[in-house]
Image (cartoon, rainbow, N blue to C red; front, side, top):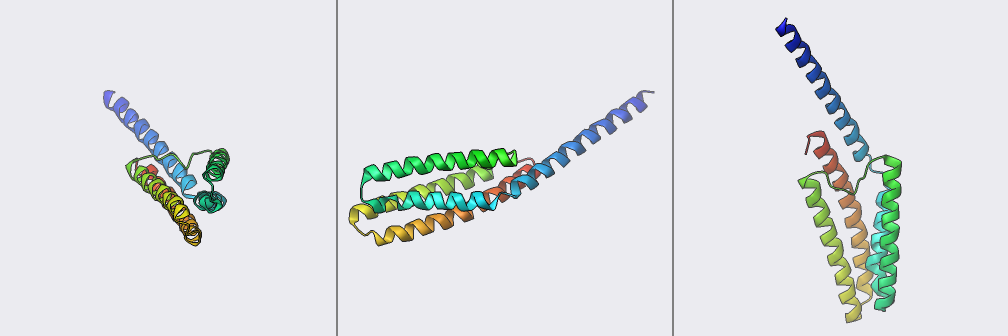
Length: 155
C-alpha cells in the first residue's frame, strides 16, 4: 500500500517537473524571438546618443541624451508589454555579463564622442555613432540568445 502511494507521488513529482521544463522551453522560445523592430530602434536610439556631441553644445548633448534614454525606456516597456517578458533584465550570470559589456562599450563610445567633440574632429563622431549602432544590434542579439539558453538550462 505504501509503495503504491510512493509510486503515485513519484509520478506526480515527475509530471510537475515535466510541466516546469515545458514552461522553461516556451519562455526561452519567446525570449529568443526578440523582435527585430526593438533591436533596430534600440540601435537607432544608441546611435543618436553617441552622435549627440556633433551638436557642439553640452546642453544639447544632455537634452538629446535625456530624450533618447526616455525613448529607450518607453521602447523597452512596449516590447515587454507585447512579449509578456522583459528582454532587458538578465536572468543569470552570462546574460548579466553580456549586459555589463554592452553598456560599458556603449558608454565608452559616447565618452569617445564627447572627447572627439572637444578635439573638434566631428567627422569621427559619425563613425563612432555607426559603430555604436552595430554594437547594439550584435549585443542585443547575443543577449537574447544567452538569456534563452540560461532559461532553458535553469541559469
